Amino acid sequence: MSATEKPIHRSALLLTVNACMFVFGVVLLLMGSLLPSLTVSGARAGGLGSLPLLGILVATIGIGPVLDKLGVKPALALGLALVAAALAAMPSCASYGALAAAALVYGFGGGILNTATNALVSELSAGARGVALNLLGFSFSLGAVTAPLLGSFASGVSTATMLYVLAAAPAAVLILVLFLGFPGAARAATPLADLVRVLNNPVVWLIGLLLFFESENENCMFVWAAKVMKGVLHLSFDRADLALVCLSIALGAGRLMAALGLKRLGNRNLLLLACVVTMAGALVTHSGASFAGMMAGFALLGLGMSAVFPTALGVAGDYFPKETGTVFGAVMTVALVGGTAGPAIGGWLAERGAAAVLWAPMVGAIGIAICTLVVLRLAPR
Image (cartoon, rainbow, N blue to C red; front, side, top):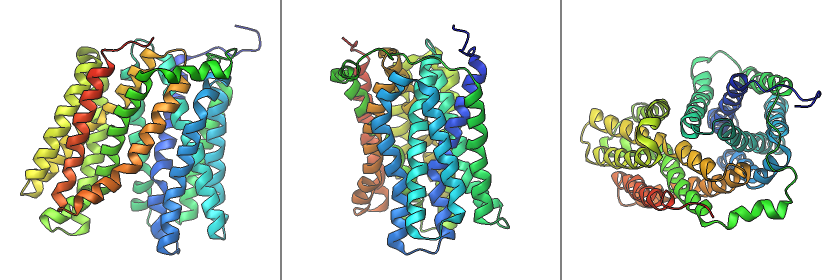
């Protein structure tokens, strides 16, 4: 270590990176909490809801090789600065165009945080990547419920105040990032053309396909869970929304359970068990004739889906420890495509009845199981 390099404190670094993922969780669901307070047309509301996702997609496509060439620290600093600046600017946005630009910017910053945090945790946790990445996923789940909870329980607080509070979180984490020592870039001296050559390996795209199915499952269920509950049991929207709450809690709890059980089960067995639980949850929900039965089914669905994404990223990190940023960027881009397709697939199935939506996670779980069996039989060449 040179005299100008800062020492690396692994525990402090992991806590900071988990805080960055918490920020990404806030970013991903923020616009859904803000839209009810905005006086915009339905078309413009849809645009505002899509722009953060577009920003996340663009960042994910481009950030992978940058992480391997320049390192994670500048990427995290940029992502946090973009999120903090965009959220702090939103209360002053006086036009739709300004709001749209802020939404795109904080989405772009969030996309950087998502890929960079997963890549760094994978690098810091050799030998226990799946465990560490599941804990990182739990931090995401905590962040994802923060904005909706603030909107629900801070009814007397203005939207502007809420945005300033949320902007303070990435600003505070940014200070930690600037003062902490980080590992250097893994492939700083490697030509870019050589770095992206890893994407010729079919294992990368098989893991991407696995994550396509998983992201499709998650987004489909997050969009359609309450609608399925309402359509089957003819409940009020308020009561049907409890399905989404149940799904979210189970997803977070499942990641904690996976972190505890992964060493005993191993990647293969945990992923296959997750597929079985997902299918069981879909079947229980599909056949549920009561509120309690369907809630139990959604809880199983959340538990089944919870561990797949972080555990599969752990497998990718084990296979490609020298090109983690590039590989993670590629597979997470494929996952985002699946996440975009999930709600549309649910809508197509819903035309055959609300319960038909549950065929999506059942088929997706089969796809994940097949990809798991193939991927874990292959070794990168």
